[in-house]
Length: 308
Image (cartoon, rainbow, N blue to C red):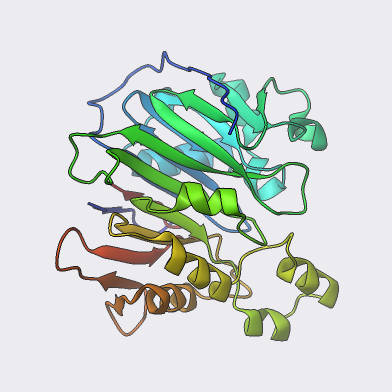
């Protein structure tokens, strides 16, 4: 595994309050995003709020998840909840062993747990996309995504940060998180707009996909409205979703076979007017006359990192 990174990023309501996480450290002044891994071989991220950590999916073994968390200085004792975006194995194959080991409360969209045999016996609090959850001091606004599963969702995490300079005009610090979707709906766009940190799927380069090893049927599924966002689609969306408040734009769920991190970063950078930081195209920066710069980067399968 490669070294970790820490980067400064400068509807109906269902209230679910989950507290009681142990071993906490000093509460962050704003939300933090920790990505343990993103891609077809395993997905897991954590949102750090004032009362602990919220895990998003877990597609890793217990040993792998713990190893990556510890690299980032995170403790399993501080995980207050686990939210499942959908039931594909690269997002949930570690859920069972994690919940058996740590008894972490699980939240999932209605029907998700019943859709996969390995999840059926796990107790979970169900919600409908569009519902709002309150977990460990963080407001979680859910929205529907478009994928070939039962009831997929994305999320916008927000924290009242009226006294925090990084907060938006409404005094709210927000992280937007969406992967595994063929299109972005109006509700999703509304909740993701202006996030300080925006984690946005940029799965494939269309030309690489069409010329690659995947059978035509799988290619068509990936390119469909129930598949994955391409670099071009992600760039198109990013141009509409960022605001002056956005400090980090992260390309997520990058295909190892049908994409390259540099292609995703270049597409996003071009869309938002950012300049590449190096010839490799591994990151890009949009400098602003006022306020914090916007940094563009890619999440990887094997390189955990933190955005503050």
